[in-house]
Image (cartoon, helix red, strand yellow):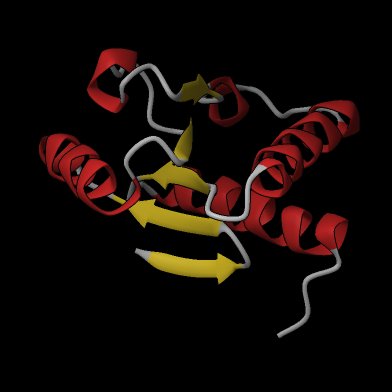
Length: 115
């Protein structure tokens, strides 16, 4: 788990650890998390249906409008309630990691997060 900025966590998992990540989120952020997943073919019920599949970004490059929609969606979720947490679920696959880095940086720029 990487704290990317206010309200955004990046969780890097192997396919066999997805259930562990879901249990951790439910234990620490029950009812206050939303997952945006770059990992394909996951069952949304694992995350109590608080789940957005964005794995298509890995297969084909998103256009700028897609990145802006992602950033707006994450920011809206985080700002809706003080305790809300946005989760970017990724894997150690190099291509997925590249997109994860792009999305985290895009969100940081969009939200004006300073480190």
